[in-house]
Image 1 (cartoon, rainbow, N blue to C red):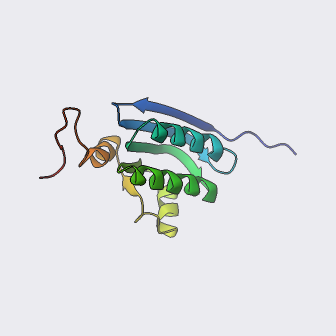
Image 2: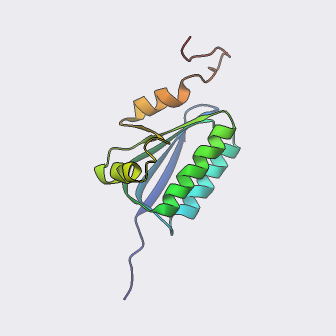
Length: 133
């Protein structure tokens, strides 16, 4: 019996020196998590402190995938940054609810909402604070 390779696609779109959007499609689990983890580590090491993970096209996440997400959140937070997830798939959203990680992650329904969340309180390119007064 042979298994087909899981569908997994990853793309990164840097928006400025500290903001990036990483889009993931397919399945995020034990066989795809190492590449996902490596890419997240690289972007955070490159100074990205406003990170949006677009999980709109993710169909499945296992415990290994959740662990990668938690580790990335910890690394971004330690650098004084913010991370938000874009998630609309009811099955994936239910996973976050069941594991109570919906209170740990900033989960947003759209890319624009997630970008607004990660940029809140971050200094703008001219050095001013674009967060709430």
